[in-house]
Image (cartoon, rainbow, N blue to C red; front, side, top):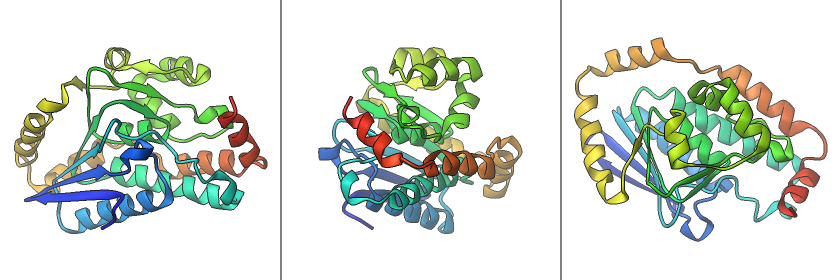
Length: 239
């Protein structure tokens, strides 16, 4: 579909590999659009398993700010909205979603990881969600649903990084595996998804769904649309 995203299809398994290794797979507009279109196409084709991973040294280093000065505030807001739409597409997927994280996973990359139902990380992973440093509310409630409100306050309020070990302790990472062992766990997931018929699996996910799509989008838009977004991003980058 796009040079920035590699999609491999094997039966009902779709593997999405973010392919901007020179940028640590940071999310530019092209990559987000490719992921959105790829996930929608996978759903239309009846995919049962979606696997999300990154080429190179990281799953995803977050929002790509390399072209900040070329973007208007409206452009930036739209890009953040598109990311939220991608997160919601993953969080409400009728397929079983698996995220494989390694390296430095920051910002919207952490949100991508959080949106998946199975979350696996390598031993040396590091996570950080700095969005509130520039006033952005993205993925906040979803993160709190996974780790608890108080833990989310402790981490997001200080914008502090956390290791794979801490992520496991608070339930954010469910399994720690070396990258060479990832194919085996993907095979386990393939065996799992055939245990239920497609409609039964989708019904289970809907029954357990805690997504608050409208509220999440509203929180994001209010925070991103506050005047001065570019100045806040410049200040963040200048730290």
